[in-house]
Length: 140
Image (cartoon, rainbow, N blue to C red; front, top):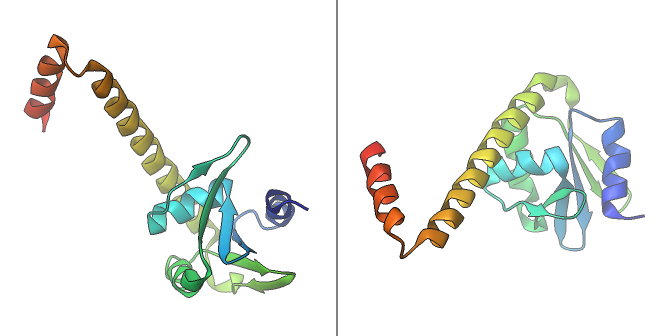
């Protein structure tokens, strides 16, 4: 079974929990959970054909757990069939949605900045770039 399939299977019954799956010496998570982990820990989001993914080394799993507990977000860690579940009773389902909203907004802003950078790169050496840069300087 592919990791993304295992993630989807676990996510169905744990929609407001972050699912972390061990894969070799890394942990991985996907889709909405990936956006939240990337937002909280400044990890890079990897875009695949049908999903997004974030991975991080196994040595930082305790830091991840501590931060998720601090943020009051439920999580499930799956390591070769063994499953560790956070105490959902001490968490608020709404915190997952709040973090998801923040992480998506942050991701949208980052994508827009990258799009603007690409456009500015294309315009290098043209007359219009000078006008654009001068207007940007006025704004900031």
